[in-house]
Image (cartoon, rainbow, N blue to C red; front, top):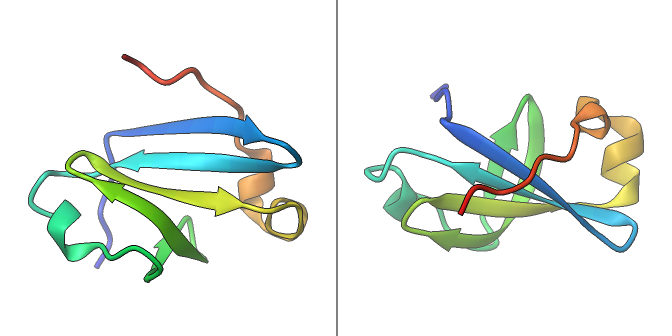
Length: 78
């Protein structure tokens, strides 16, 4: 299934990055912590899930070897 998401937030955490993805509320219950999810063709492990979406940790290896390394940091909207 391919879902276009409504928003992304990227936050530096040491050498890694935390990527937060908002999804439609009906999909959040289908996403499991420690489960796998693909973002832009990259398979990642889900770190956290809440009612608005999920987050993953992008470690340096992932940032160097995938297209996710080109994401720019954006402030999360409150």
